[in-house]
Amino acid sequence: MPATAEELRYRVSVEDDELATVVTQPTGNAVSCMVLMLHGGPGGEKDGPEQLYANLARQLAELGIASVRFDFRGCGESTGRYRDMTIRRQVHEMRAVREFVDERFRPGAWVLIGESFGATIGLSDLDPAYKAIVMLWPAIWLLDGTFESYLNPEHLESAEREGFSEIDGEQIGLDFLHELQQVVDVSAPLVDLATPVLFIHGTADREVPFQQSVRAAELVGGARKVVVINDGDHCLERPHEREIVHRETVTWIAAHL
Image (cartoon, rainbow, N blue to C red; front, side, top):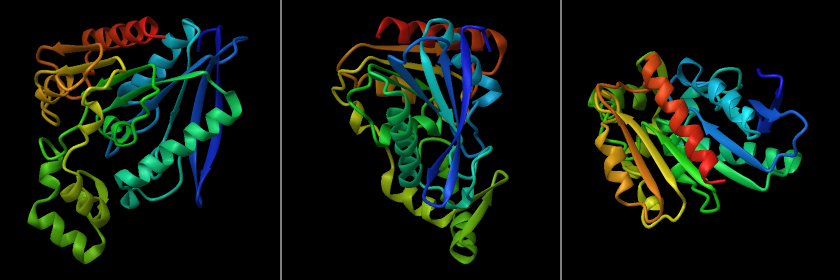
């Protein structure tokens, strides 16, 4: 952590659970803006894939910009069971963190970053007052990609029998599988949206096709940019890819505050 910033750790209460939360605050500065970072899943955690969010928090702090990241219930250091996860439940958790930060830090503005399923959650309860939005390999049309396989008969039968199905090492609950059948996509808030939106996606993404970002950008009414990284897979973890992700994200946010 640079000398110009400090990490503050909290446990945010939500019903009977606690969300492990980290606020990165530039030292000596009033918090004029807060960047909300939403991690993906299943299997994600607050620092992001390969420390994506931890590194972005440091870079933003160097520019005097505060940020908050947290583990959804059942992830990382938060309490709760991941098998109870649903979109509605994670939206509730996101709201709890925002309310906590608003009360304690009173930021004058908010920015949203969502990666993968974190983008799904951000779009599911999109605040039109965000100053800027960054969508990293976002899952928007939910059955166009990995989640389609979640609804195969084997998983559904297992979930009906046990209450959850074991998928890629995670217990995925029946409520979420039913939700996938109903929600289908979360693109509606993007239609004619005036908030500036940056999309970053790799062309070789095997979990969420990069065409989702291209298609989503066409819906936005205001400023938008699509950064397509050739041969990049989901999460864009190679060093030269991460350099682009960091640079484009920080530049976009700074330009729209």
